[in-house]
Length: 278
Image (cartoon, rainbow, N blue to C red; front, side, top):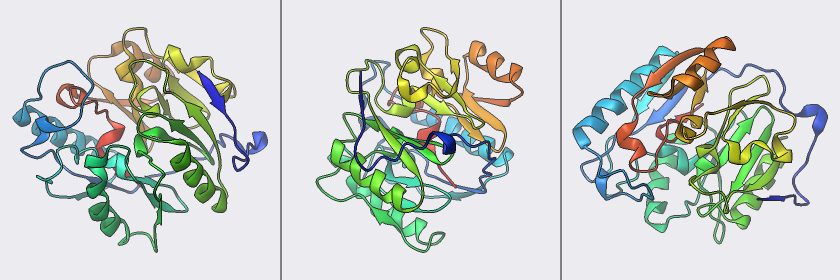
């Protein structure tokens, strides 16, 4: 594991991980299309069953609504089998919106529709430009600080461009190289920030200097998939079937909502992947 620091990444210890409750009000979601099983995956869990995936996606949407979010439901995109994973197309913050340039070329034409939708809520959007590549799943917001994963999908130039955009809006950031971490596609496959300096993390990432200031909530070995959970207005949505993490979170005072995710896991997808929350 290599920890990278660049000139433009402002590391501001006194400003990190402020105990600020940022409430979400909206989310963009898109159900899987008929072509869902043709999407990209590194998993060896078999093909997803579309009828089950649609049922699970609807339950996910209901969970977001139970947390107070108003949903923008985009129609299925039959041209792009991975398009249900809308998170990878944009990075949304309280101060700016950035549309990405996904690392998988087959996903880049998903971005214009998301950009069009974001322009309805944001005055404008910034863009990651060639030769940069960046997937939203590699970006973890932790208060006013961002962890930016360098992965097979997000390259150094895409990370540099994002960090510069964030800097102009008053955010600090740092790079975390996960290319040698086995079993995770994106940075947020292995971490989740829950607010108040609390970070869910897999063992392979727990010892990084970048997370030394955080209160770590370690997932049980063999249950790494559960690390991709999301905090929404005081509740934590997590994948069904991982009672050890759920019990840890509830002991810390979180209300939890378990969501069945089996069909999305088959396509390398997690809870954060299925929505753009703002």
